[in-house]
Image 1 (cartoon, rainbow, N blue to C red):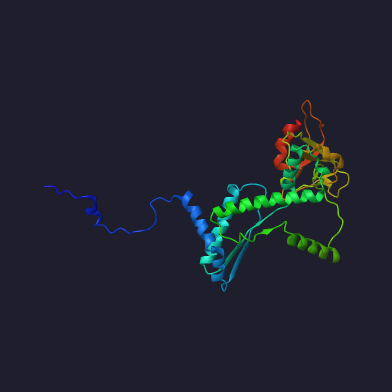
Image 2 (tube, rainbow, N blue to C red):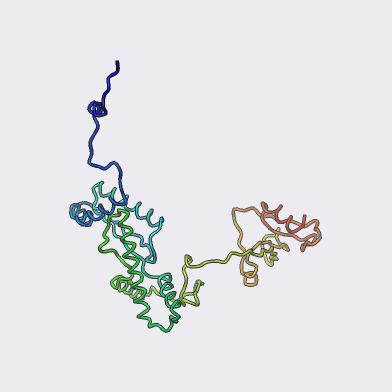
Length: 299
């Protein structure tokens, strides 16, 4: 004999926890609502007020560059920092996150100059103060966009008062510190080779330099030993290998490694096309002997 039960019968026999959470997250709709609630209740200000007597933990953001939308690298960076701050807050700290932006540099200037070029305008015809103001407005535009995108990730911070490198207060402080260096003798004229942009008329950072890929011509070079207190290498030639043969005429030194074993090799036989002669004595690293003698066509 079989008894039929409806589904409600079994539900009454099992203790299931109840929740107001929806079955589906619906995050594209729900997350903006949560962000709006946080803004309405001033979550950041509330946290600062409720934890004002706790030990401070401040994370000053390493500033992103204000010249475009955020990408996955920005997201990972900010989410990890937010996890750290929220963990510290729950551990009993007044964990304050201070976001900021780098608003100076060639990428911003290049964008404004690109606008000039598209309009057939020469950048040199633009007043320098007008040019700087356009750069400032461009940077501020992307600061506002990135701030919105970071908050959309759920990152809690002082978004109403971030630090910007282009703020006049920051620039005046930099000028003040440079003045201190000048007054205490910390500034000096020196010589240093730097990459220079003839178009932008400024020095370039390594990150701003793009190298053209090409195949280098490599050469072996013999340096005759002129003077030495070591009898073993008198009359011998030290061998080096370089990918920059154009530097040889200005070469002033040859480096050796104290952890590498060197030896003097005497040429006993040469193949056709070899530049060495029988009887030549060459100094090079022992572990490179096979490679060198093969390429030099000597034994």
